[in-house]
Length: 132
Image 1 (cartoon, rainbow, N blue to C red):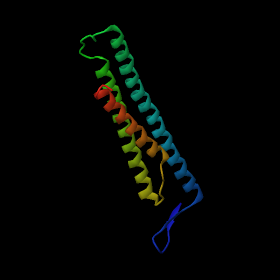
Image 2: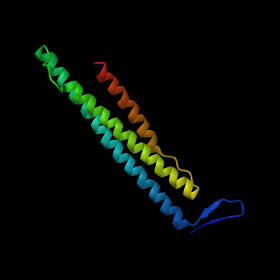
Image 3: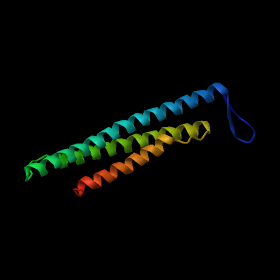
């Protein structure tokens, strides 16, 4: 149970505090799962682009396609970044709701990792976009 003292601070019992910690860690694990998924999408898109770019250089002139390796790679990398952004937004919203409801603050290492992966993904997107 939680109660407020005369200063308006919220005090929660041990069982509720442990439940909140478990809920926070569940949110962290969920975001880590999304980071793994988006990292796989980003790396798969970049690998497909580089592999077929390498094959095209071996064969000579690349074939004209509607959806070539560059477009496919861009799509996969962009989708991976979008998935990661949506997961990070949902994670932050859920953590803020917990903070407002129970008055505890949480620091998310998974959120920082999501930011790092999204920056790296954006770098790969730029590399594929400019054909590096």
